[in-house]
Length: 522
Ligand code: KIV
Ligand code: ZN
Image (cartoon, rainbow, N blue to C red; front, side, top):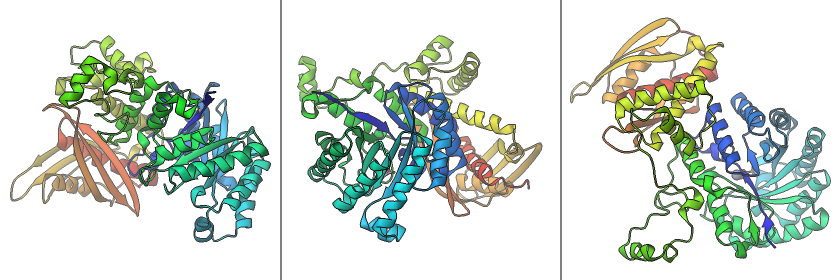
């Protein structure tokens, strides 16, 4: 008989832990809406106690995406009442909220991370579950580093937290140490005891990819009784990432007899979700990545092409249409009407704009189409990203940030062999400020000129530039990493003029710091 496997997506929590992948509230909301279309069962929307921004994003997702019965919204808490409160007060707006608590069980974590005894940690975990149960009926407990834990202590913990009311037990292979056969045996043993203890409790797994085995371990767990899997889109996540949702889901979908299981995922939304996550987070998908890589369905060898022409199943185990791969990408131009542009956004899963929002987006589209003639799907993500940025600015304009933001008005950059130089004009509140500098190259000069007038002592750590989509007129996307008072900030910007994109990215980084630190006006 085919069992339902619950799919828990943690792209917005574990996935967002990738350095530089931080999303703003609008982007998070858009990804959450798309995850709902993908029909995942549970969305882990963030780690609310980590920042006010994360708390607000989880709350908005709970309100706007968790407003129906078909999806569970959760967020992560450490085993501390303040963390649990933050989760409760952000997820409680959802129809089906869940509190997710994590606490380590391995000797390494107990001794080296917490410096506490097994009994002490067990009591903390049980108390945390008891407290969470006073707030919500559904509580997931994750035994961090489970795959390196002493089995009997791991089981003792599971038994105690289930008796305290946990409704889902999650077994993480936190450091990607597990091996499929061994992990399968672990899940089999836990499942056997758990179903005897309380057969209503779901058994879940959460695998990391440090040895490239996250998908294999997750599938081994399913074969051995796991009811639920935790995954991310494109396999993004801490270090080498998490089990990739599209790989796990398509393996089950393609080999149902092997796994005797099915999921509720709408596989035709996989490509849209993958592209949205990759576009917003600025994380390219490896070209040969299973399912979502650019080459996953491309056949180059003559022998293969010949076979495919005769019959697709000679070399294709998945019909590309089943993962939402529509090879008819429309190329838009300034002459494409509203209808075509709206349709192109809808095909990418972005179909929930009001008329006035769409009008604003259409104006941005026309501006870009004038500059670069041909507009591709990748460019549409950039239009939306910039639109969201503008809105954050406008939202914040109504509060105390507005007078502290910098806005780039103009720039001039001269590149030559002896003295590359730049001058910039920025605006802050009603003040126009001008600066100039020479540098070792045009970007160095440009950034020095901006630093000359901005009151933020940050250090550029990394600068990346790449083209978005194709052609000579392609948008240049600049991503920078800066450090300010020991914290890392990432900022992005795109423009057909790469110097402007570089300047915008730098000013965006400064404004991100302003939001966090509310710097005084110079
Ligand atoms: O990897 C891990 O252990 C986690 C837990 C919070 C589930 O991400
Ligand atoms: Zn993890």
